[in-house]
Image 1 (cartoon, rainbow, N blue to C red):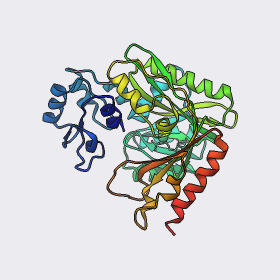
Image 2 (cartoon, rainbow, N blue to C red; image 1 turned 90 degrees about the vertical axis):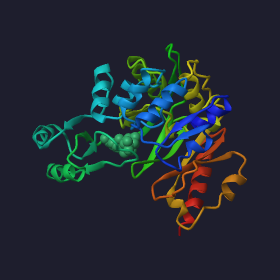
Image 3 (tube, helix red, strand yellow; image 1 turned 90 degrees about the horizontal axis):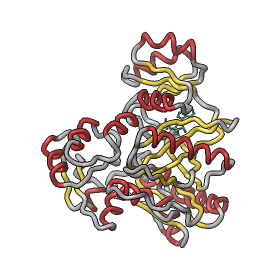
Image 4 (cartoon, rainbow, N blue to C red; image 1 turned 180 degrees about the vertical axis):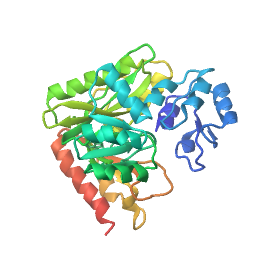
Length: 360
Ligand code: ADP
Ligand code: MG
């Protein structure tokens, strides 16, 4: 979607992606099909591009650093290094003075005792790196479950987090230019199923103070990191309306996909603008929105019929061009836009049900 935005704004794009079926490459001027640490490919990017960005935080920071010696890399390798590692991420957020959930770092079995004494169960053990869509996480109900869970996750560095009794989850997606101009998108309310984002409702149904506080915290994080690019900040809201930062993503975010249909500028155009040194565009809402993810599960009996979705003039379908519709894999999303989010919610639930009933 970044590539589409960049091409429609007049830029050429070279995509580095080891996947021969890379969806981004289908829209690119050129596809470098190589590993993210391939020296020749990185050298080509550095010599042929004016600037480089990433939509994937697991690109090695060393690759981004190597390119940054020649051309601007936005967001910076150092920001990406923080966002891809839960230990560094939480420590950075706390150092800035913002709240996270209570957590303990578990690097080896010698860290168990201290963590068990201090944490209240239930808790969640998460691998420090490479987790996404709820993967690399295990719920721990009592202290005896910690050791087998740690082994199951490969005995790699982890964080043990308090499980929060959530009122809801919200997120702020913002764009910050190299000169420090910030535009934030309207706060989204996010509902997950099995650790995977299922639905975003915009504007979030929280009190004004809660959404403005979230926006303030996200801005502060971006400023303290001297961040350039699109940044998504996920928040937990507990039953007392206390806000805690769950995690950040150094790129356009699934909970910001609604911006494609309901905002003056979308999050991918923001990534292009900030990469190219411009100010982010205005982010005003053109309507309310409910975004629903479409997972590979919907393909159980072949490609689903999109008829019901597309019959509706206020519903927009986005498919990502991924070849393999695996269970739980994000294949696309749809977005219902209109004046009243409660009505959109009813409509979205109906369409979602139709897609999932095709499975049976
Ligand atoms: P991922 O990198 O997979 O998005 P997250 O840490 O955001 O990992 O976890 C995915 C989802 O799991 C969260 O959005 C939330 O719904 C749930 N979750 C994760 N950690 C906690 C927690 N400490 N308390 C309550 N729910 C949690
Ligand atoms: Mg998350």
